[in-house]
Length: 367
Length: 230
Image (cartoon, rainbow over all chains, first blue to last red; front, side):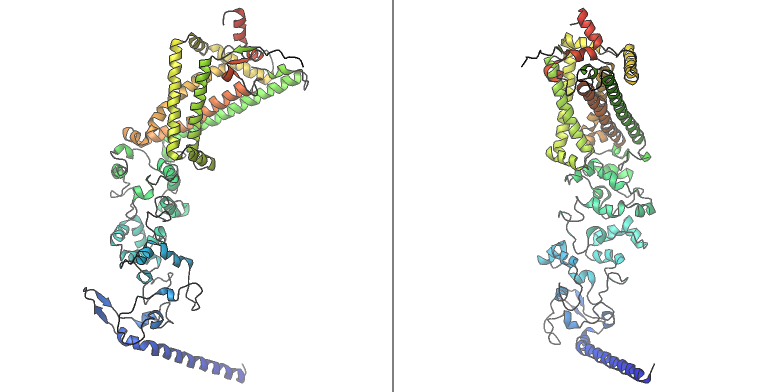
């Protein structure tokens, strides 16, 4: 490297360092006033209701978040003086996250789905308990969903949803899915695997992923995948056998009162049939079936529910089906042979009687 | 233009037989269409059929109505056997005999090799006898399994899930055998084969062509000529 180019490199480096120092100073300058109060650990306020509002913001965490380059007032835009005389309005993420924004804030189509979701509708209706972006994604420490520490990282989702949905969270934790997740199983479904993310809708909504008409498809995302199911010894044919059952066919034709997966297996506290507490444990089958079929007795548990007549596990049903299959094919073969022989004789007699001569109609007539 | 001589015809079916045969066709059509639509429910044509019947409930209603109609046909058949000498004669004619096996086999041989004479069948061919008794037996099985499936919910409670599954397999599988052995085969033999094409009109007019009758029921024709039969 020549002396001139070394000199140029040094200058560039110095210029960069100076610029960085100024920028940091500017950041600090702008936010330091906010942090003079909010940067003090233990800064909190007790509301008249008795609720304690934590107002401390850890600047170190903020600088690790996706918004590390933002200033306080970028989000808390209504704060124009310090101390602020009124309580600032909730942050509106849409200030940056909108289509065509120039700040580079990501804007995915799915963000807009929030509006028609159960949460979005509740928020629009003025429900004070309705969650906003921050309730799930966090406020000052927002991280990408792929970051282990993110509130919306896959394994953290049940806890986040559980903040409001306490009972369901407890049921989920005890379920086979919840237990698998606790063991770090990457296949285990979390809330969003079944309910969606920004598009979560009430089960009553026709477009909901957990609408009775869509439950089987939602469960099938994992349960008809042999690659996943064989790891856990679960039969991947369960979806297909359901679709061929009375319930499945009725559901397919829009009879939504017909049982779907969740009707028997429950939605959140799903347990394997071997568990005495499972709704599909043989001892509990009469009770489970009895939800729709009053008076269901032990005979409901006598036989396989997810029966596949093409599989040996169906026992006598398999053998009878196989016998009939052979009988049907033999009968069909018999008919074809019968027709073949009949036509053969007709053609031979026709040839004997003088070929294509029109005066040979008798060759057509035969027993 | 010369006037064509009318083709000589032989009476084959009475008016009452034709009426019952017509109702039987209707019942079987209702059962086959609504049954196949359920078995092949994943196919577009089956879904269109189910929609045309007014959905799953309508489909079930058509199937059950077809079943009731078929039972009525069966009851009327029993009644006819009690009151009608003609039915009793036909019943005697349809009793399977050892000669049917011989005749049936000679029919196969004649078709295959062309040697000897074509078989001379009686009022009913061996296959017709087999189909009459076979269909009767199959209808009893279909009726029994169908009764179990009439209300699956009640039947599971009364018997067991396994038994209802078994009946479902028996019912839907045997329906396919019936379709091939008794419907397709019958249609071929009676309306397509042996010079009957395009149709043996007996099911509408009660009469079939004399030349065909002679060829297909030779022994019966001989007996009629001798005056031992009407």
